[in-house]
Length: 431
Ligand SMILES: Cc1ncc(COP(=O)(O)O)c(C=O)c1O
Image (cartoon, rainbow, N blue to C red; front, side, top):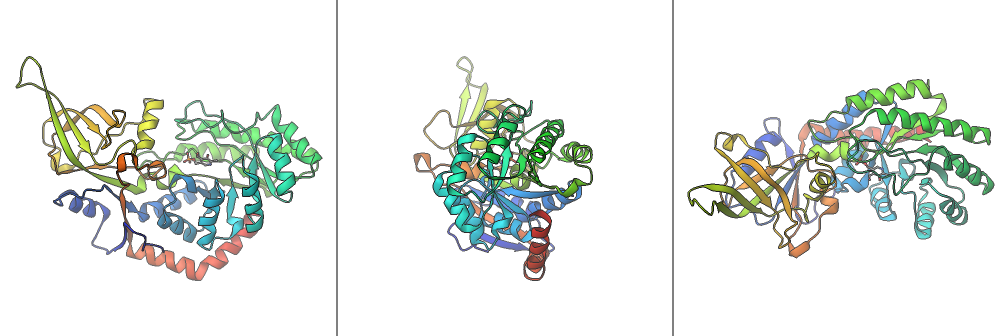
């Protein structure tokens, strides 16, 4: 694996070591580092994959690369045999460069440049999503042999970020029109996809969306198509305390009802946040502190403000922006055992830049910390690194990658001994 990149390290944990122990060790290190750092736990990703297989055995995951394209994550998932949802030719290139076959990639951006289409064609990535007529005309010109997946709009009533305003056609009105248009252009429709929205809190939405896809499967058949791919998108939660069991129940119920015995239909999903959310912890150092006192009574502390070295313009953007959209996700550092007994004060955490919107959380009851200590954030694997900027010159966190030695050995074994066979099975099953 490519761990030689600057600012990254890869450590295999022995049986007597644990990520929790490493975190504890890092929290007490002094002096703190000038640059924040992430601990990436590959075992967490493996555990998520096992859980997915147990709960959704009929749904093949195609990991959404945009969520976190760290090479160690991609390589772990490649070894586990997942597919990949790529949004651009650069993501496609990155995945292909790891030796993943083009058949394990879906180009799941409904709008693609002509150059991107030609690139996909050249590389043999044939599954593409689309959601409008002009895109179909473009595909007819640049990649008429592609296997097309119609993206319908099906927004959850309760997602943190809805995608339907930007992507997806109206299933009832535009869906049949687009299938007819594809027929006219002699294009090959192979299935239907949707994305209920990121950070969905509404499992039942998947049930209705699968029902809407089924109607279009039947319509496509009346025009002579043989649709065989149902892509249920992403939108699953990924925090360690947010299970997907309810989502799995709704999806399995829908598959049983609308696609009994699957009837030659392959079902895939594009989970991003689910796979990586809980795999990353962030340690950010307190570089400054202000104590805000009452103007009338100097002994009364109104609030403590900390200035830490990661923030909204760094890897904390995702959760902070979600919180701004809906007051659902709070980004507060973990209260560690070491500090749990200390009195709690009203606290604000600021990111390092000169921008006053760089605020991570405010008015939180938090035990007092000192300059030169770390604060720990959990569940930061999704989108944080993808969105991070270097605003004001502040660098993005370095990454420490950890895997249990026996897990890593098993992954290597899968790759060397089973991967080729696994891939063949995969291709036969899904394409
Ligand atoms: C087409 C598509 N698939 C999958 C994903 C991943 O979504 P999530 O991280 O919510 O699972 C996204 C996120 O924007 C997306 O746009």
